[in-house]
Amino acid sequence: MIDLQPVKGTRDFFPDEMRLRNWLFETWRSVSEQAGFEEYDTCVLEHEELYIRKAGDEISKQLYSFEDKGGRRLSLRPEMTPSLARLVLQHKKSISFPIKWFSMPQCFRYERMTKGRRREHFQWNADIIGQPGIVAEAEILLLLISACESMGLSSNKIRIFINDRRILNSILSQIKVPQELHSEVLVIMDKRDKISSEALTTMLAELGMSSKQVEQLNRFLLKSELQELRDSLNDTEGIDELQNLMQLLETAGYADYLQFDISIVRGLSYYTGAVFEVNSPEKQHRAICGGGRYDSLLSAYGGETVPAVGFGFGDVVILDVLKELNRFPELTKNIDYTIIPFDKEQLGTALKIAAKLRLQGSTVDCNFSLKKMKKMMQQANESGAAKAVLLFPDELSENKVVIRDLTLREQKPVKIVDLLSSAE
Ligand code: HAM
Image 1: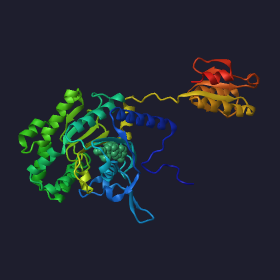
Image 2: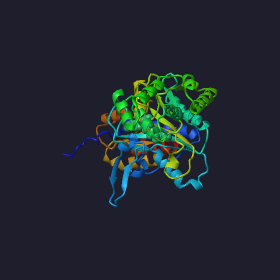
Image 3: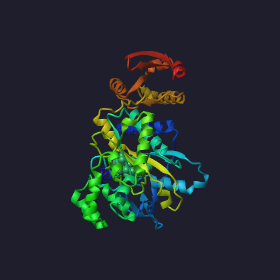
Image 4: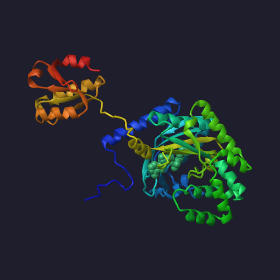
């Protein structure tokens, strides 16, 4: 007997779950399109080298990689951003910037399985490339907020915790951590919530930080107010930008959603400016969404520096959150008619009526089980269809069918021509 379980960390989607997934995708798609974002897609297979980074990002260690029959090192994509950068670099001359693009890729990461983290997930990505300045962050954050609001989550249920990598870099510079180590230190700092402080200190020490530097860093990280940091940092570019961004969102009327949080680092080494994540106000989940500014990713692949900002919003945590809050939408099957032949003599007629109704735009299911009429009526009631079309020999001999309204529980004979001319 073969193993019938899905591969560890992956999911099967039964129809009910698929309906929910489609609803989520539709929400993502419609808020993106409403905000002028265009959809793109790429193949799930990419060259492995796209994901290998010097700073030792966790994601590079979680790759599902293999060698194809032509000897190429390939990976299942763990995230979309490198593919997006590849597309932009490849077609840079023909693209008119700025671009606002979105996608909903399935991503694969060989993760340690914990709540909210699986080895496969879908991730809504929205990115703005080629738009300098914090207005791009503001637009990206507004898109994020509109998605949350359209799922019924307002600022009392979710919060965007935001920081700026330049603030973290400026702290590291001030405690004299060499510039070339900053990315690696940040990747380690992102593990703060996941490993013990001793393990963290050891990793930082292995990178070359002294215990005094680690202590100084920890002291900086206790500062929860931007003003407090401003008073103690020499370089305040990150603070200025973050305050401008917060001001912009306040003017737009969405200040309630934003909260400065020095502990937000995000584990991807390509972020260069704002970094943010979405969580409940008490931060009791894994991040619902994560993103930031990544101006140097394209140059890391050999292009010029291009301003870029975006986020990835997974399907796993948000569905857990909506379930917990009892916010799942009511999703029905939306079937207009279910056609029920009485015996096999009417199968052909049933198929013909179904096909004609469908041509006219109705959603039509058929029950070809030829079970007892009582059983088939029970199935019709449970099917979610609005009406049943019953094919009985007597009515059919007069070119009629019986139409039963499954909500009102009323039925009457109707000429087939009338049914076909009245179908929506
Ligand atoms: P990320 O922070 O690695 O960013 O992931 C973004 C989101 O994807 C997470 O907040 C979470 O919702 C979801 N996610 C990630 N890994 C898993 C997993 N193993 N299981 C379930 N959900 C997961 C990125 O991937 C960046 N490329 C996002 C980005 C786009 N930055 C700029 N543009």
